[in-house]
Image (cartoon, rainbow, N blue to C red):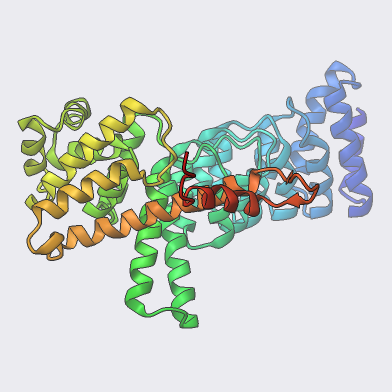
Length: 412
C-alpha cells in the first residue's frame, strides 16, 4: 500500500522531491526493510522511476543502486544506457553487470562511458579488450593507470597499434613490465621516429646522419627488449618483419650482443622451419645446416660467413659468461667477427665491403661502452690520503697507477 501511494504522489510531485523519494525507496528495497508483499511492488515502482522524465530522479536512483551488487539487473541496465551523468556511477561501480553487458555499454557509449568503465576497480580482460578497440586517448590512459584493469598482451598490443604516436600513451605503455616484446619494439621505433622528426626540424644533423643514428639507436633498443621464450621471440620477429624492420644489421647487432635467440627466431620465420630446429643450427653454426638455413631464409650470401663467425663467437662468450647486458654489444664477440670479415672482404683490410664498415661502427660503439664503464668504475674509487696527509682524488690515484706502468725498471 505504501509503495502505491508513493507512485501516486510521484505523478504530481516536482523532480527535486521525487529524487530523494526514489533514493529512499531504492535503499529500502536493497536493505529489505519493507514487508515481503511490498518488495515486489517496490521493484516495479523503481522500474517506473528508472524511466522518469527528470534526470535528477534517475541520477539519484543510479547513485543509490550503483554500489549494490544485488540490485535488479534490468534497472541497472536501463540506467547504464542513460545519459552520461546518470550512467557514469553504474558503469564505474556496479558489480552486478556482467562482462558481456559492460562490453555492450562500451561499444554503445561514448568517451564518458569509456572513462567510467576504464576506471572500474575490477575490469575483466574481455572488457579491457573491447575498450582498447573503441576508446579515446584519455580512457586509454585511465585504463593503463588502473591497477584493477586486467589488460592482457593482445589488449596492450591493440593500444600500441592505435596510440603509438601519442607521447603520453606511449610512455604509459613502455612503463609496463607486462608489455609484449613486439609492442615494446614498435614503441621503440615510434619513439625513434619522433626523435628523428625533432632533430630534422631543429637542423641539428644532416638528413643522412640522422637516419643512420636513429636506425642504429632503434636497433639497439629492439635488441634490448626482454623476451621470455620462443613464443615472444617469434612474435617480435613477425612484428619486425611486418614493419620492414627485420634487417641483417639488426640481426647482426643481436648476435654481437650475445643474443642467439633473435637470430634463431628470424631464421625460423624466414626459412619456414620450427624454432627448435633453427635454434639447433644457430647453436652449431660450423655445420652445413646453418648455411643451408641461411640460404633458405634468403640471407645475403656475403653475410652468411659473418653470421657464422658471430654465432661461434657468441657461443664461446656464453660458455665463459652467463651475463648478457640487454642489447649492449660485447667486444669479445665483435672483435673476432670484424677480423674474419676484414680477411674475407675484398681490398686492403676489407675496405671494400659495406659489412666491414658496419662492423667497425659496431666495434667503435662497443669500445665507447667499455670506456664509459671504465669511467664509472673510476668514479667509484674512494678517496685516499697520501703519505703527507693530502687527500687524493680518484683521478689522481689512477694517474699515478697508469704512470707507474711507463717507468723504466730500476737497475739491480
